[in-house]
Amino acid sequence: MAHERSIYRCQQCGFASPKPGTCPDCKRMTGELMALVEERAAPTPGRRRTGLSHSRPRPLGDITMEHTDRLRTGIGELDRVLGGGVVPGSLVLIGGDPGIGKSTLLIQAARALATAAPPVLYVSAEESAAQVKLRADRLGITSDGLLLWTETDLGAVEAELDTVKPQILVIDSIQTVFLPALESAPGSVAQVRECGGRLMTIAKGRGIATFLVGHVTKEGALAGPRVLEHLVDTVLYFEGEQHHAYRVLRAVKNRFGSTNEIGVFQMAERGLLEVKNPSGFFLAERPRDVPGSVIVAGLEGTRPLLLELQALVAPASFGTPRRTVLGADYNRVCLLLAVLEKRAGVPLASQDVFVNVAGGGRVTEPAADLAVLVAAASSYMDRPVRGEVVVLGEVGLTGEVRAVTGLEARLREAAQLGFTQAVVPKSNLLEAPRLPVEVHGVATVHDALDALLS
Image (cartoon, rainbow, N blue to C red; front, side, top):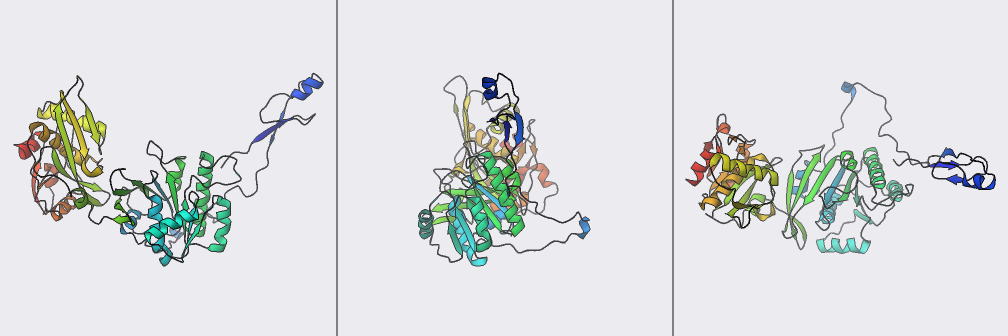
């Protein structure tokens, strides 16, 4: 909530100033220094948000839960990231770069929601009605339960809810709507915070599932105050490279489902298409028996995902060797290269090293450590890793290979794509059940290189 402004007024002549001090009129007319007295402006009616509940404190055992069915969006990947569908009364924030497909995703989801739980109110505060209609025609969306309104005044939207009574509300975007009672411009910290709080009260108080579209800054964070992320129930990031057709919807916060869950889409002429088999999508063009290429079985939330890690090691042209990393954490890759040189004797101090996750994918979990080391060693030795082998394991500074979580799920996904062997941490095999592929346990980086590159 924005703070009320104070006015400083002269009690003798009535001169008003926004800052404290003395009255210049009295000093000029009489020569006296009259101090200005602070006067606080009266609060504007209707600006204070009311609480979500007016009940008294009760024992935890006396509180009953209402079981409500989730609403399906008609998009399996979106339902997966949301935890099984849309929860009535939830507040969901979707962020992403401009043009990544946020509005396209939401209007496609609104098509199914308008049939399952009409009406759906889509408030477009950035585009005109003709622009949204043009996109809907391109996607083949014609639904009487989907209501479109171009409005930027959030107060007018709130007043219209009593007439429309929507089950789903979409605000596109939170940075362009505003409350007239606040003097700051749309998109400012005060406006975004107050509008987000008002929409949270609407969603919880009326039981309306609300979607907010948020812009992303150059640093990759949601524009506006970070308090907006703490205010909502679910935060989804829509990611993708400019020159790749795939898009990844990633959950970084979800009060109604698993965090770090992902959904994979492909941008096509008719909108966003679900990618049912993302592992096969990322590995469709991988080369066979080429030095520097290693397959890693990652885990995004509850979904196993196979990715190709590529490394290129070449003699440095200048005094200081280069380290270039795409799709992985730069500092962690540099740390792993130092472990490879110190513990396995691979001399990289005079070599340029380039690491890339093929297809524009991204891997950040420690389970990919061993694959990074093997890919760099494979490129340096010019020895390929067998194409049917999957590599995974966390690597410590002393060169030990540590256990990873979800081993069975990772290897089951690899077996479905035709992989027959895997190099895994030896400690994972102590209590491992029967695995779907042939496994080889390694305890150190040196053991892994001997098993794969000897």
